[in-house]
Amino acid sequence: MRITSRRKATVTFLVLGVSLAAIAVAVGSGWIILNWRLDIKVFLGFIFFGAITAGLVLNTIFLLREIRRNEQHDSFINAVTHELKTPIASIRLYLQTLQHRDVDEAQRREFYRLMLDDSDRLLTTVEQVLKAGMMGHKRGSRGRVAVDFSGLVQECVQMARNSRHLKPEALRFEPAVNGAGVTVNGDPEDLRTAVANVLDNAIKYSGDQVDISVRLDAPDEKRVALSVHDHGMGIPPAELKRVFKRFYRVQNRSSSHVKGTGLGLFIVRAIAKKHGGRVFAQSEGEGHGTTVVLELPRSVVPEKLA
Image (cartoon, rainbow, N blue to C red; front, side, top):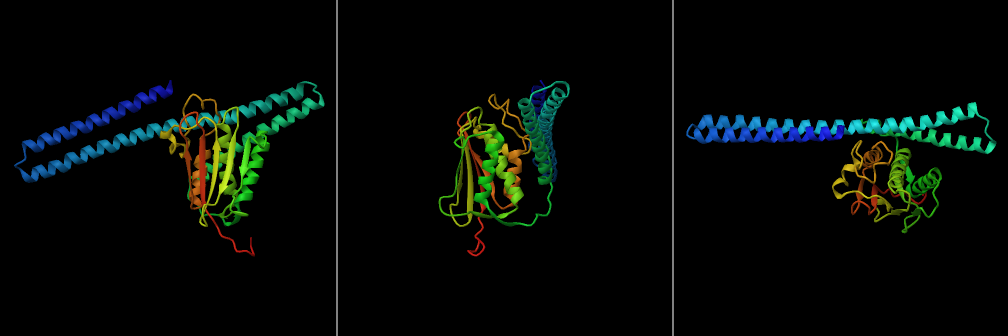
């Protein structure tokens, strides 16, 4: 209901802005035509009405951006509230059960495991929000070191398998075929966050059947490319660039039940830019899966340090 009302407001502001701009152009043109012999007045009138038209257009653009931004903020708050409230309620329920009922050892261990999973989910949400806040402010970079990117990706893949209880064939890793380690000069913590977010995003949008291939390539001496391909919900072509914006989430029937804050890919893009690289998505549309490619500058390490 709220989304519908905001869309109506957006359309109203757009129509109003375009109408006012058209009226200003029509009045200005008419005035110029009627007074075309008065050179100075025509010139001043042209500038005056041009300024009015430009102001109306800029004002309309600003209002539309603010409406869209407020809508994204509300969606983010709702998503974060859900991401925080659900695991807290789950942990509270298990604790109350343990407090008021006698359960056997096997069930007790299962409750502990579930509570740990929920606490990890809470921690992940908080870290995402904090990381997004840090990326939104320009700060000095921490010291960078030579990172074995192939090993780092392999660690992230194994962690994703363990945390999501996936079999190796569901999340496959193909290392670079052209050699040993692929080295990147950067912040290990940031790079690990970027890779983990790309993997987490692919798993979430794969649905019930997780089938993801992770491939690491080094096309030349200057670049390293990490490709994460899933066979999940896919992304409409018009939204391939928008998914990397802060708070943005793909809106379709298939993704309505997917949990998240809309910050994962935004953080990936910020980290890629910070390291002089880029990230982009490829998809043929809804239902055709998605490939997210993270490209980073490759660091050539001397033999004695390799």
